[in-house]
Amino acid sequence: MKKILVPVLVLFLLVFISCTSAGDNGANTAREVKPGVVNQMTTDMFKSLVYNYQKSPGNWVYEGKMPCVIDFYADWCRPCKMVAPIMDDLANQYKGKVLFYRVNTDQERELSQTFNIQSIPAILYVPMNEKPQMSVGLASKDEYIKQIQSLLIKAEADKQ
Image 1: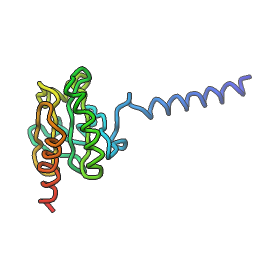
Image 2: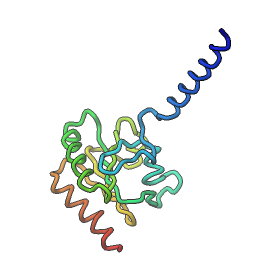
Image 3: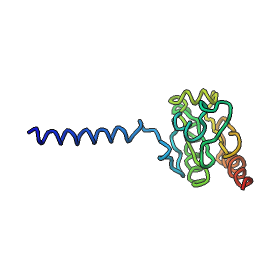
Image 4: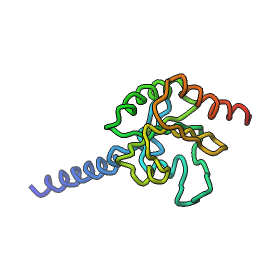
């Protein structure tokens, strides 16, 4: 009986360890960021993929490989719920050109406080080599496109 029980126990432990280490409570990691969709972002992801404000406070250093848009939202916010499908469409439209993220302000309070988010939805536009810009409140899809084109796409084209 011991000869069977030990291998089964070892197999169970290996499966358990691989399952618990593979996920980080549903949060994306740098390897899991997908272009063409809006990726849920945690504070730790923000520090590694966008800006590590603890490592270089007051000196914006963008960590990303392409421009990004970050939607600060809350589940209870009606205008945020109206912005979500627009961001989903834009993520698909700008696939390969702009990354899209979503930050839940109730769950990521440190990040929300760092950016002084007091009103939502708040959209942060992050170009490659310039300071980010924030817009607050619900806007039309055309307005978001205008901002992406002028702040992110045009800025990149001008640099090349």
